[in-house]
Length: 394
Ligand code: PLP
Image (cartoon, rainbow, N blue to C red; front, side):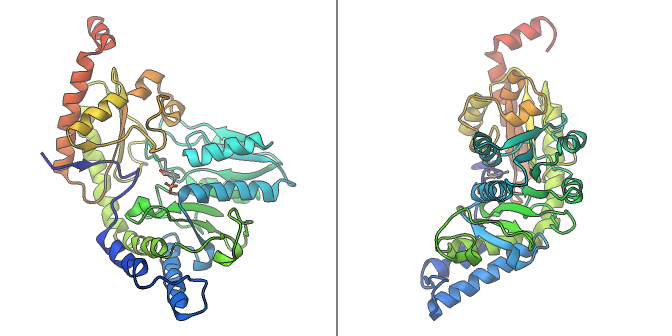
């Protein structure tokens, strides 16, 4: 048995040793404040500028289009709230999708309570946004479209270029939450017609608590955090120098390895999903088979309760998840799985397995063995399963 199989990389990733090495001087001797004029400050400021270049280059952005934040949640809040309040004289209508992360969902709920109107566009059974519904939702008073690049639960990648082109043709700002996609799949903000993009370092082997908002050069959002003049007067607060330097290093490595890691993890996707679907009866893949993030698999098992399954696989050394890091722990089935049309009872029996480039086939074989054992144990305790067997459904 492998010591521990970590298959929860969509929740967070292990920091790379090179990232820690790059950060170390800024956690020790290089402790200056980048806003200070003296040499301590200047060298830290230069390190942040260097990181900004690296972070920008992953998505074909210019360095002055990157604003560092404290993570994906802050970037999402900033994008939505600032656009809403800046553009409210033009209109108060925002379009988003039914499968966004809570960082977008809850921000939309907040704005709805403050008089904005939100349209949640549906997705098909693979989790891909319905373009016809999106087009039909656009109104004179629509000020923003926000659709995630790739989904954190089922891994489905959205037709971002098409959505961006549509938004641009209508003169509507387009934001994408690319927290799961940034550094993992190619993104080109110019070709994709993206105005605003959120990313977070800890999803690509960088440190936690640091992220960025990409803001296209002609767009100047009002600050979300008020205070000092940091980040060209747009994001106040002393800069998180070690975090930003770590983000830069993680971005540089992610860009260099993206093609190779992507190809390897795409193959691992097929390996894992095919093995589960073949070896465990009454299992179903959630999300699109091909248009999905490399290293991301989500499966539902009938007659199973997800939380029990997670606890039991954890006891066997497999760390997995039922959905988004924040949603786990709640008893409500995932809004993403419901949006792709799963009935409650099947949505409850789902597991998300997200790999990193360190994951091996041996890890996956072990995981499938554990899942087989756990699923059959839980089904043996399920009156519904027994009933279905009796009625020859199962
Ligand atoms: N958006 C998506 C799609 C995510 O998956 C996450 C984290 O799971 C976030 C936003 C929030 O990012 P952070 O953890 O950096 O606040």
